[in-house]
Image 1 (cartoon, rainbow, N blue to C red):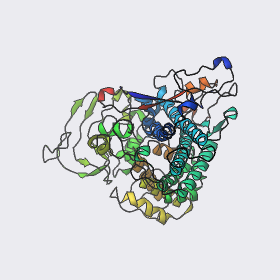
Image 2: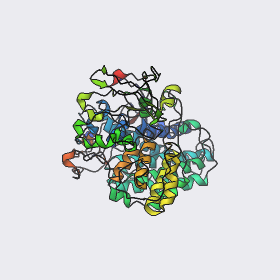
Image 3: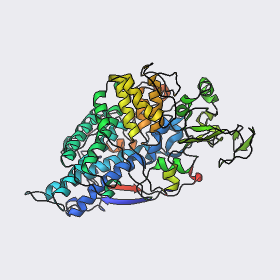
Image 4: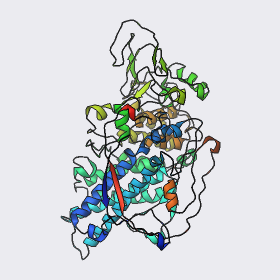
Length: 571
């Protein structure tokens, strides 16, 4: 696949290299001296502004952005790209953490992008502080200084939080970190520190609520520091709930805190520019039906017949695509008797059955489902049968088609939706509040988007209940279904965080990644990994860092540029 990159060499201290051997200290001679490169106010402000794009691309643009969705069985794909096939096949395999693996970059890139953002923010704050010595204003005015300071702290804390979401451990780094005493911390400790920092950001942002944030800092027009505080509230709610690796950990979350922050949050939808600001999952799964396909484990719980039950009852290797009849208008608006072509044009007025060979895929069904608001039944599977028919599905998940096709990758890229904030509050109500309040929140999307019968508090159920959209299902089941279907192909990690915390991932799915293999070699640590059905429940193991210490090197952020997608890119 052809992805071009623009390399922006920034004079940043890499926080990623630890060793105590002077003869291994090889500097980047192409990187300018930090004190000179960041001496000008404009350079410092540009550096701080760039940090959010690095944070964003670590989530939405790196090759790894596809992996959480397929590991959570929200999306399905047997294509090799980015390691999707290996990490979503059954029985599950351990994540390949070898730096020599063909798709190692998909596991590495999020780590390096987020630490690139952290490093840039740290350097920007340090230069800002130097420029303010003696009580001076360094940037255009005092408001510009304050905006840069709060923004850098926001991106630094948010990037630390994403490391804690996805990796088993990491280096918590903020503006006061002493690199000579840098230590790895477990994900829960890492996240706790990030949340504390984000709460500090909220306080500072609210105290400076009227300061405007330029549109090109986050690709959102009319944003103020007061708005950033609200966005931060929402992110705290997401990550407080989402960091949990097990059902026990998610149950122990401070749900009153989640509810409070979610109720104060606001959506976040940066606007794509068609060049560097884009979302790989929302683009690829919007422009091509070969990429964006809905897993039956996502849509099947809405089936009004025995289709999904029968599919689950088969041995995994024997599962095949089927028509998922449903009342959920997000999947199918209704039935139209008659044969339709792939564009949806009616070819006859009578229900017809036929069989056409398409590669090694045979489709023989009645074309009687119309396009839903999020998905459509295209009566073909596209995925290669020899790689496992259980991957195959008739349904393409095209809720982002407007962004990917019609807006030319320049429309809103939805990351944090009001639906996610509402549904986090619904889970909080199910755990520490009232079922009636949870039902009201669930119905915002269940009825408003899905056109389904309103949920009630008659049968609350339990957190162990499986997702279901059916009227007779428990409130917990209906909640889980809504939380999965509303968050799929929005923020790439939300469905994975949900299923992981509920204990609903397929047995052997990695509940987090190890520190990337390439980084382990730099850190002089033994390689380790997670996942694999045979190793389900076993912890990963890692050696100790051989030496403590820190050395500085230039750090390159490579912003990935969007290029037109063709199905020939699939492997």
